[in-house]
Image (cartoon, rainbow, N blue to C red; front, top):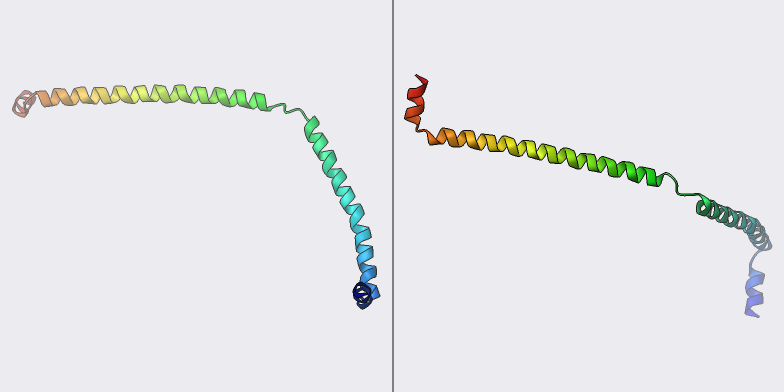
Length: 103
C-alpha cells in the first residue's frame, strides 16, 4: 500500500522522462561495450613489432656511452697522474734551488 502511494506521488511526466532516458541509455551502453570489446581484440591481435628494434638500438647506444665514459675517465685519470708527478717534482726541489736555476 505504501509503495502504491509513493508511485502515486510521482508525477506522470517524471516517470515518462525516466523511461525515455533509460530507453536511450541502454543502446548507448551497448555500443560502448561493443566498441571496448573491438578495441581489446585489435590490441590483442596487433603484433608488438618495433619494440625489439628499439631495445636493440637503445642497448647499442648505452654500450657506446659506457665506452665513451670509460675513455673519458681514463683520460682524466692520466691528467691527474701527470699533475701529481709535476707537483711531486716541484715539491722535491727546494725553492732556493728552483730560484737559482731560473737565473
